[in-house]
Image (cartoon, rainbow, N blue to C red):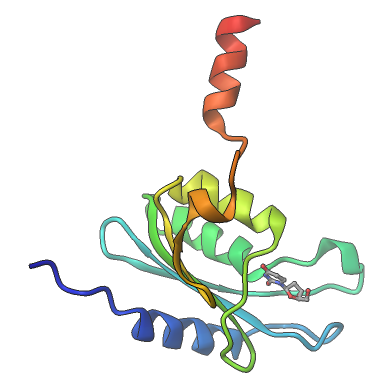
Length: 136
Ligand code: THU
């Protein structure tokens, strides 16, 4: 039987990532952690800026680390605030996760483990661009 995925460990790694957040404006730290299909762990923390609108969510750093360290597909993802509580990725970051994990990516949420397809229904993705290419 396949071993149970260790969500407790992944969440602990996300909580640790949140301790590195640079969030002097909101005071709201976020940490994200994910497993890649080759077993790598990638993480991110939010990084704010005096020009509030250009804040980098924790997921942005995570996706950058994914590509920086060899690419691949995200398989398991968790995101927490500074208190270690599970939070949902914002709308923009759901799109980033869709791009890099696809519909089967698993997320640990307060409502249990859910797929990306469930948390971003009717997603727009790369397939839509291909369709546009063939249909003009
Ligand atoms: N934040 C994230 O890092 N990820 C999310 O998915 C939600 C929001 C950050 C952005 C900002 O630094 C702080 O949380 C408050 O919105």
